[in-house]
Length: 481
RNA sequence: GCUUCAUUAGCUCAGUUGGUUAGAGCAACGGACUGUUAAUCCGUAGGUCCAAGGUUCAAGUCCUUGAUGGAGCGCCA
Image 1 (cartoon, rainbow, N blue to C red):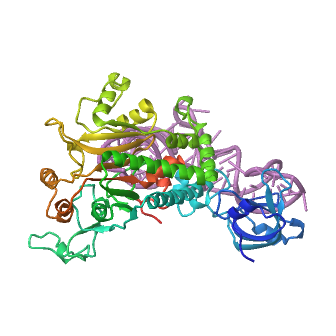
Image 2 (image 1 turned 30 degrees about the vertical axis):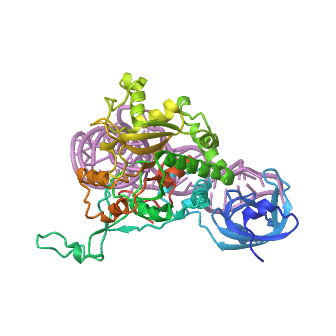
C-alpha cells in the first residue's frame, strides 16, 4: 500500500478508506492514542490502537520519538480536538527510540539546549515550523523574481578577488599548512596554490551579478555567503544565505520599490501558505511574552506584525533627515543614547536605528543618501552636494527587532567617478579591471541590493537568534554537525 | 574583540549570613488506565554542584584563572 502523507490526509479527509501513514510518535496517550507526525505539516494524525488485540511487546515500543507506520481505516474522530483519526489494524515499528538516552522530551525545551542538539532539533514543533517556513520563503523569493522576468545567476563561491572590502574573508587553499611554499621575501607564495593566486570564499555576489545584469537586464543571486568576522550577535553568521538582485536601468527609487515589493510579496506568501506553522510560532511567542514585564511585551501578535508590513508602506527618508530626527529626539536630549548624535557624518549605531524603527516610526524604514565616506566605493555619488557633505545613492532597509535587513544602492556607472573613488578608497583597480570594464563598454545606470535571508526568516518566524533559523549555524568557535 | 550575566539531577530551576545527609517540578523507569489531547493517577531511581587553583576548622555558597552558554555592543546582511 502506498504511503499517504499526513498533510494530504488532513486536507482530503478520506473517511472510510484504508490508508497507510508513516512518521514519528509525538505522544502515546492512554495506551490507545498515537499522535503521529511525518513532517509534511505541523499537524499530527491520531492513530487509535486496539490495545486489547495488540501484542503488549509491540505496544511498549510505541514511544515518543519512535518511527512507526500504521495501516487502518480513516474514520471521523469520536473525541474532541481532531476531525479525523485512523483506526489502526496494523502497526509497524521502523525505529525504536530509547528515552533513557534520547535528549528530546515531550515538553517544552529551551532554544539554547536545542541549539546544542541541532541534529535533533528538527523534530521539535518549533524548529520543524521554522524550517518549513524557511523553505516557503526561499521558494517565494524564486517565484517573485521568476514571475518578473529575472534570471537566477549562480555567482562563484570561490573568488580570487580580495578587493571588495565587504569584510574579512575565509581563505581557500590546498597549500600545506605546515610547510607552505615561500617566495624570496619569505612570504607564503600563493602563485603555487591551486588557483595560482590566493583565493577566498565569497563575501558577496554583487560585483559578478552586475556583470550579468549588463546583458541579461534583471538578475538575482541566491546563495551562501561567508564572512570571517569575529561577530558574536543574534543577527550574524559566518555562513549565511544572501539574495542579491541587480537591475540594469534601475535608479535608487526603482531599487527601493523592488526591495519593498519583494519583502511584502514573500511575507504575504508565508502568511498565505504557512498558516499552521505561523500559528505554532505565534503561540510560542505569546507564551514567551507572559514571562516578560508588561512594558516589554509587543503590541502585535506575530501574524498581526506580518500583516502590518504587507499592508503599509515603508517609511522612506534620507540619512540627513534621520539625523535631524535623532538629534531632536527625547533620548538624545536626555543623554540616553550611549552614542549621542553630535552632527552629520557619523554612521548610525544600532540604538539609533532601533529608535527610528521601533519608537519613532513604528514600521520598517528605508534610509537613503548616506555620507559617501561611510559607504562602499561602488555606490553612486549624488550630484550637487556641498564639498565635505558628499552623499551616495545608498539605501538600507531597517526592520523592527532585526535592524538592517537589506543594504543596497544605485551603482556608480560613470567610469571616471568610479575610478577616482577606487583610488581614494585604496581599492586596487588592476584587480577589478573586469568590474571597471562594465563602465567602459556600454555602461548604464543600474541598482541592486543584498537581502540577508536569515534575517528575513527571523522576522517572519518571530525567532530572535539567527542561529535558530539556519539548520547548522556557523559562527566563531562553532562548526559542529 | 569588548561589556555583562550565568553554569547545581536528563530538562527548567531553588538552595538563606560559608555550617550536619543538596531540593522541587517535569522527563525517565515500574505499575494502573478503552476516548486521550504536553492525558491522568500511584510508585521507583537519578548528583564530578562546569574545571583547576586558592581562602577557611568548614565552600554548591567567598577569591583567582580558564572553559562553555545567554544578552548587549562593534563589524554587517
